Length: 256
Image 1 (cartoon, rainbow, N blue to C red):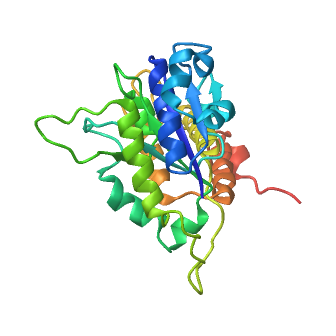
Image 2: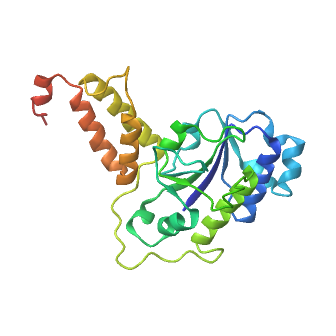
Image 3: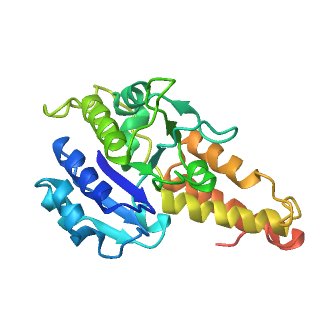
């Protein structure tokens, strides 16, 4: 299963190097930086020193301007926001969530890729970014001192995910009779679906753009829980297209 680590608005070059080292230790190499503080962060001296030999991870890392670009091809998103939100995806411990995600079941066989999102050192992840995720990971820690720096948090998540994948042993074969019901839509496809639905809901008067409340994040969470496939995205976008048509036009059957 493809695994990607995404660092959002990282401000300390050393943390990028530490992240690369942690990833290589656990056998991962897909690192994406979203709008870091330093445009040359992958080549800065502090980054290279903290990477401690994981230069191949830095060489293959990508810098992008937006989170949408970083999420391309990813179908399951895990936020690493340690402070519970009053709204959004469920807050779970990594080991429990990863065991279910990597288990021999219908959902795991349909995943395109799993992404772990880490926010900036000062502000963490924004609510909007957390709302897009399927789960919010909370690392069990001392309730009186739960502070983890970025490199340490990424190391824990990478270790737990590697453990759930079976360590460094060969990946187990799918269970006999496992059901495959289509490939899950990735984050960019889901974002396009939500944008289309938002336009149609405004057009039919269901959504007030001046007072949207949390309707679209709630729909985002609904689609995440449903595990929408690529084929289902086409169906749902077709529904959205019909909703936005004038009643008479929408009522006419399609020809051909």
